[in-house]
Length: 199
Length: 142
Length: 109
Image (cartoon, rainbow over all chains, first blue to last red; front, side, top):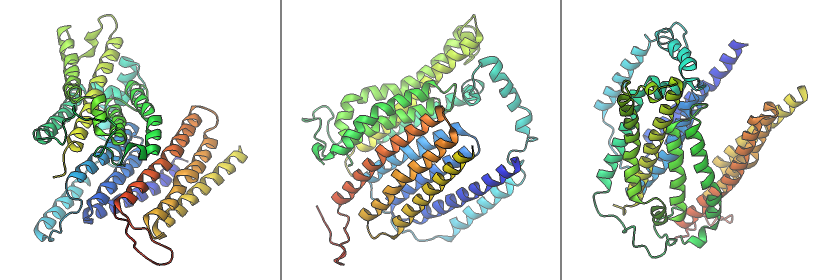
């Protein structure tokens, strides 16, 4: 029974991977940036489906919310400010070959890694059993992911939050130093949105 | 588009924005018991406010959530996270050792620590997404 | 129970078939406005059939309530989003394809 379930989800995974490759190739070759922004939202949604198949629900949640939700809106907002078509660039052979070689070396490197879900992999022998056993004993919480994120690896989460903070500060420094479209405090009618709504 | 022409999206948005914000709060505080936590909740919260800004106009959104509040919230979240760590230091433990937050029961200390840091993460993420939206939507076309 | 299984199978296959029909319509129709008609099937009857099939599998419980709320959310948000999208397309000036082959009359604001 377990073998059959593994085989069935394998076909769905193959389908999702094929769709991911097709979407990625289309994004790279399209010159209409609006369509590319929409397709990158679809890419994130397919990744969220893939993560759910792999039983990583927290990651799928975050990927769907960030990638398919707010990232698309922000990219469309950026597109409204710049042009919406990419200029035609000539195909250059040198960088293409370098990228292909680097990708091939990375793929060759993954041949040495333990196979997916292998219970004898080092990560399942040293750290993971300690976290799984420790979560029930020390926290009494059902969600092991939050316990690892917040407490066992709290430094990493502090660094992550600092990265998000730095990104926000960087965007503010780059985009808000100059003049703004309208002083936000002297608008006559709050509902008069000649520029606000996008509908 | 004038506001009176946008009747349908406006009514639907009025029905949904409170639910989106409520769901964001649910995800934030139930991160310990199910999928969720600070990052997801911050993004959902920001998405609710972005929807408000898209339907009702950026100026109305800036009256609801002024720029000064967004600026301060970006820093306040990270400060909360670091502050929890320093508080653990001051109460006798290591940096970010939540056991030290409650001297009687280390499990309560861990719960309190996780709650506070998730709150900090959610605050920073929501404020950063909203700040980027303000920065992009508030500019003229180049 | 076998009846519930057959019923949920029928609903799931029906819903999936409707989604495929919507997808074919999305590809074959001539312009944006008619394509949105085809895509509307996915949001309304397509997803509701799939959700009903899943609800029958889940039985009575919290999961069924969550699926029902999902269905209500989709039924409210889908048509509103389609309306907003098409209104924006019309305001932008996307051409409407007339049926007497006066192709490409532009409504430029």
